[in-house]
Amino acid sequence: MHTGLSINDIKRLVKQSLYRLETGSKPGDSLVYDRQTGQYVGHIENKTSSFYQDSSYNVPSYIIEYLETFDSNGWNKNKSW
Image (cartoon, rainbow, N blue to C red):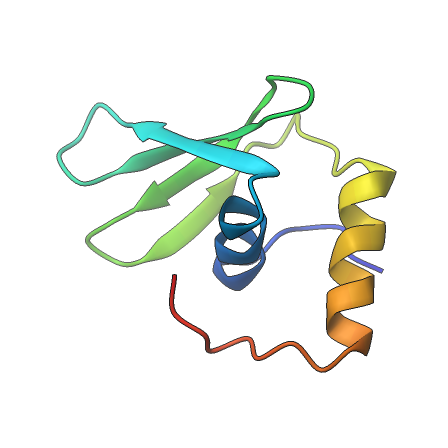
């Protein structure tokens, strides 16, 4: 079960339009938002290509189910955006 999201999870969710990216305060950084709820999920640091999930964000069940479906279907986690 997913409790935290990885950078690969974020890539999949953005590509499927479940999450959206917005420009962060630092050049190249991106803020991640849940499209359905509008809630802030976390941010991606461009310099390190790392995702940092907001501690107050609880991954909704529909996102967990979506990710588990992709995982069980052998999704290629190294796929580029």
